[in-house]
Length: 200
Image 1 (cartoon, rainbow, N blue to C red):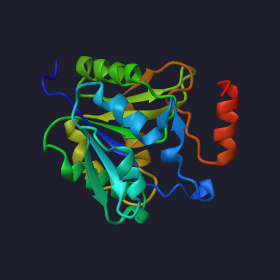
Image 2: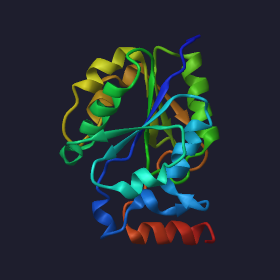
Image 3: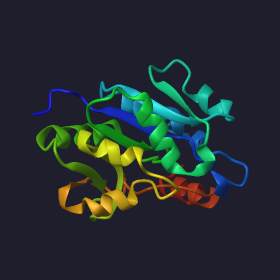
Image 4: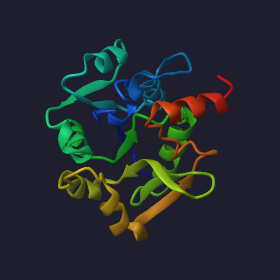
């Protein structure tokens, strides 16, 4: 068992470029902006929570007002998701596992994050990667301490994709309910379709 609780890093510094002027982080889900909803879910685990944010979007910072999450400004957010990972990791406690959560997963729940934490406590030396109930790889991903150096060396906009491929043999897949791990809505049409399917 690992006595040190992982830190949770929420990546919320993307540009929402395909939303045509809207911000998917601020889409209302369950009555609150999605960014606030995902931060609340992370905080419900009792872990420390950090949120990587771009420097020029005060509305996202405002969505987190009053929450016990630490904001990390990513000055080079436009360089890609790796910049957010590096900036976030640099702000975290230096030891321990880290759960990387994409901020735009509108179906992810506190129970899903709790399941990741349980898996991490059972197999702390493995990467824990959430997948859909059908086995499609998704997010969040929990990285053990040994992976932090490789995460800090990432560049570009592919995130940890290559790292995950390289360490497939050291990865435990964790099925979350339905499509919780893979529902990622990037366009107004995708949001509309998703809401219609939920009866909203």
